[in-house]
Length: 327
Image (tube, rainbow, N blue to C red; front, side, top):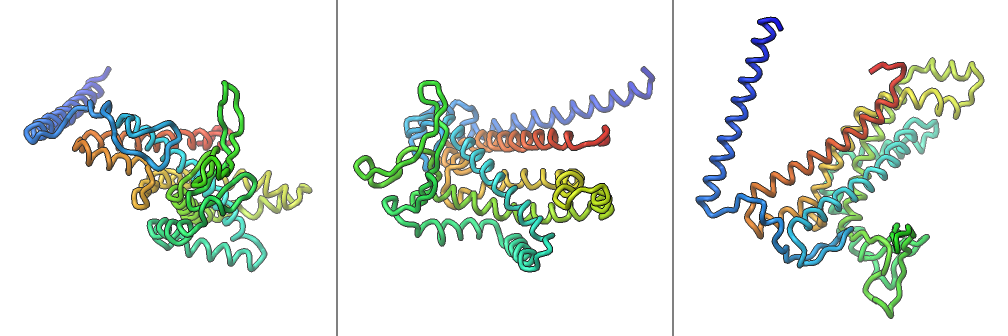
């Protein structure tokens, strides 16, 4: 190895050691200060009894469960909301984006009104609007709105869910039986009003940005591509599906990744409506234990992991769109 290369490696190694030493010094100093004030510095609190309940849990949870299980419930709730909102935002965004390109004047203007209105309203205001003005006044379960196995009431949205009874997958259909529970719908998966408000607001808000990304991506494909497809005898629908859309997706995918990442992070606004997402659960744990440094570190690691996982999945999809090895 040449002397210049060795010198570069030595400089980089020294820099890494210096940065590592600074981090170690900062951690040791913070730990000493926390211990001097009687603030816990270990993660032993994760095994302690939580002592509180949650309004949404996809796995069994009681006040006798541990803080660690509470964090897991918060993480799973964040994943559930992000996945449902992301799927709905994708559908809304692509539909609105193509609608903006429609030759139908009214449809294009309605799609444009949706995009410009929703995109310019604060997301928190939209969450509060759906929660306070739309979902809270809904009727009680005995008068719930029913459609195709879905129940919508002031207790939230209850929908069919996949269950594994005796090791076999089955559909758990919700039902309302006053003799069993006159205050709620039984069975299925229930999303409380807080989760419904969060999902709707995130989906509509993110969908408005996706719509603009889709519109720009389609318009980035040269008109000559459609003309060439027509010259080959393809119909307009075939040209859009086989020629325009594949090329547009290569332009759409990179900014689409950013929207999915932003959606996951924006789900932390759930705390303002009391939904038991990761941030809301973490805040409760922090107030009860005083383990601020540990809780914040766990939250940062979990949100970073969610973002990196989302990025990895989208990069995998993006690589499938590449033609001829072009990157």
